[in-house]
Each structure stands twice: as C-alpha cells, then as structure tokens.
Image 1 (cartoon, rainbow, N blue to C red):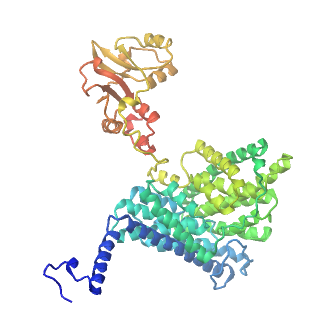
Image 2 (image 1 turned 135 degrees about the horizontal axis):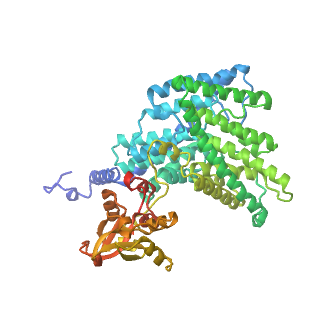
Image 3 (image 1 turned 90 degrees about the horizontal axis):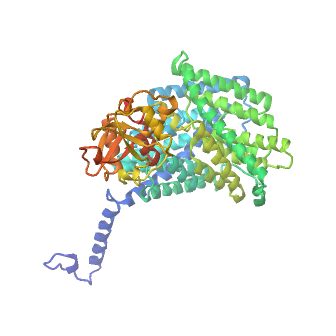
Length: 630
C-alpha cells in the first residue's frame, strides 16, 4: 500500500481496508473530543448519571452502616441485616440500653467537632447554603464524616432520618466530582442538585419525587440544561436502589378505601381542610421546637460533648420507657416500624398514637437540638402518620357518618407534615402518590397538603430548612422568578396617580381635598415651579391614621429622590435606588429635571415591591436608614 503525495486520508487507495479503519478511527476521535469537551452538555449528563449511581450505592452502603451499628449496639450481633420497617427485639442489655445513645453521642461529637462541623444537623440546609453562598462547593470530607456521624447517630437510637444525610452525602460527592473535572459553577451546582435528587429517589424508590425535591428545594435555576441531568441522576439512583432493595415503596401501604364519589361530599372535604390547618400549626411547632431546643442546649455547660450526651441520654430514657410499657422502642431511630404499624392498623388507639407523636417530636428535638446528625424527613413521616391516623379515629368517633379511612388519613398526614415543614409541597404530594399508586388519594392529598402549607406560611415564612440559614443571616429566595418584570420600563410600574401641590399648603387643607377623592396620590411638592420633594401616598395614609395634620406640606415632604428616564428598565432603577439609599424615583422624559413640568410620574420602592414580583432577599437587603419606606 502506497500513500500519494497529497498526504490526505481521502487520497489513500479506497481498496485498502487499513485506510477505512484509519478514517473511522479519526472520526471517533473527533466525535470523542466533541462529546467530552468542556462546554458539551454530554459531559454534564455523563457526570450526572455517575452521581446518580454513586447516590444509589451511597444509600445502600449507608443503610448497611446503620444496620451494623444498630445490631452491634442494640443486640450485640455483628450483622448488616436490618429492616427498618420491623421493630427491634428487646435488647439483652435491659435498662443499660439507655447508655447506647450516650456512647453514640460521644463518638458523633468527636468526629463532627474534629473533622467536619457542617456534618452536624439535618444536612439539607448545608447543601442549600453551599449552593447560594459557596458556589456549590462542599468539602469532600463531608461525604465520609456525614455518613459516619449520621450512621452512628441513627444506629444508636437517635430520633432522626436517613434521607437528609444521604442527600448531603450524594451532594458532596457531586460537588467533588464537579471540582475534579473543573466544571463551571452552574454545572457544579447542577451536580449538587443531582446528588440531592439521587438521595431521595434511591431511599424511597420515588424517582419523580427525587426530581421534584431538587427542583423545589435545591436548584436555583429551572431550565432544560439543569432539569435533564437531575432527572437522569434520579433515574440512575432509582435503578441502583431497586437492584438492591427491590421495586417496592418504602412502606407496605394497604389498598385505601377512598372511592372517588366520596370526595364530592362536603363532610370529608371539610375534615381534610381542618386536618390541613392542624398540620400547618403542627409544622410551626415542629420547626420552632427544634431550634428552641438548639438554643437551650447551647446555653448549657459542658460544651458540645456534654450537651449532646445529655440530650441523647434523655432520648435513651424515652425509648427504653416505650419498650418497657408499650412493648417496642417506638421512637428510636428512623421509626419506620411505627409508621408501618399505623398504616396496617396495628396501632388502633387514638391516645397511643397521639402519645407516640408527641414523644417522637420530643426525641427529635433532643437529638437535633443537642447536636445530633440526621434528617428531619423520617420524623415528619412518623408524626404525620400517627397524628393523621389519630385524627381519623377521633373524627369518626365524634362525627358519625364521616367514615374517614384511617390508613388513608395517615398517608395524607405524612405528606402534609413533610410538605408544610419543608416547603416541598409538590414533592410531598407526588412522593405519596408514587408510594400508594392510588388516584383516589390524590384529591384529599392535594387539599390537605396545600392547606397545611398555607397555614404554616401564615404563621411563619421560613421552612425547617431555611430557618437555619435565616438564623445564620443567609437569606434564601422563597420563589423562582423570571426576568419578565426586570425587563419592563419603570413607567409600567406607575400605579398611583401624581398630584402637584405647593409647599406652603397646610396639611389640613390637603387632607380635606383628599377626602373628596377615591384614591390617595403621590404628591409632588413644588415651589415656584421647582420640585421641593415628594409626599408619597403611603406616608399620607400613615399621617391620616395618626391624625397628623400640623404644618405645611413642604415640611413633611421627602427631599431625597432619584431622577430617572421613564423608559429606563426597572432593573436599572432598582440599582439606582439601592445605591442612593432612596425610596422615590421621579420619572422624566429624558432623565433630566429642570422643573416640575418635566415629571411624568412617581414610582416608589413599595410600588415596585407590590407589582414587580421582587425576590425576597432583594426586598430585605436595604440600608438601615430606608426601612421606614416611602
């Protein structure tokens, strides 16, 4: 075989098989460079699948770790076999079982304090904080320390869940992979979200729920380039989880006796609304209690070791008393066995269900408040199931003919407390539907969860995740926003009419004139054709309510304002107001103010807040001297 002088592959003899192979090799190399180039979406997709597989395997290994610690510490057996949906047999240690969580507390405090303080707590807030305040960077050591700390805490009886730790472990792995492959920041954040989705999907066998959790709680951007990798990661984690755990939901939920026609009755709908309100209040108590216990423990002497030991000793006493007088360690660990008993009608007394709900709340607050490591998902499911079942039993007893399904109401309660406490409303609804696969539960589920979330929002804005970050001074947006409003001109935000008024006019005279109007305007205060200041409608209303009629209009007008072009984008106007510390923008035709005749309208900071769909952090981050508003 000879090669022509041209030297190109196209010049080689077509009769040569070697030439054909070389051409194919070159084409593969070129495709490979495109496929794995830094800016190719295929690279992100491949890494997302890798994170999903790692998240699924992490869930498997984490469960094995919990099982080993639990069997060694509770039963004195070296075994990885552990079914959380079955109650643990009475320990051979007797009353000395109280020492087991104490030992666990000492180990957890040591490894957290010395290696990764961010591994303390319920995990998800640290993931969200890393995304919004650290560019998605999570230290690799968190993967190992969080697994050890949470595995020991849960295995020795700590009343926390395994979902939060799995989310943080998988998210830390995603962050590490992104840093090793030198991905840009948005792709690194996406891989962190992939880890969160993988953790939920693998744990509950709910791939859609995992995806929605990442969208509602973790992802700061919702677009095809972020959602597709997260979806693939959740799918990969689910496949891995099913390979080890089987294609079963987290709980064995019986068929729910909720016929479709039943939901058209006023009685059940009213019951679901009442239940939603109760869960809204309960989620408020849940959130506040955890952080109140945290504050209390931090004030106790003995440092982290002493505080955590005290808290876990009290947890040990609680579940030992449960075993002695009620028959099982009901509130120890993740508590899925109690949830299963509630769903399968093993626990049928409203009193015992309410007692277990309260004890689980107390044990969870003691565990996390004293510095334990673990999630809040499982305690939410426990309390939601027990309280929901108790509500159904009491409602059926006192309202004849209501016939609420106890297991169905327990399932609805699980979703309601999770949705209200975490803010992941759609996730809670879809996850429960994925578990039950019963369309008849969807309508009461949507009603109760939505009402619960709305009731909690009326009482407090922060969820159980954002509360921790708010206390840290790290504000997190509570909604997703597009650039729609930011790209409108400031003239579109004129909602309040403008009225000119001489600076020497008495305030009482102005108010008398306003009584004949159906609106309160922004008042442009002038003297001899020149602008002296602005008296905003909000300030006028404030003066009317306080009966402040003394002085002239000029004495009450605010002399500080920004002059902007009426066609300026609201994004730029916001920047001008924030930089100047002002609250009022005077709109002119060319952005120049020579006299009052140049002003075409007035827009205040509060006009923008009310009509601009402004993100919460932007609303709050203002200078102290402007908090009184315009």
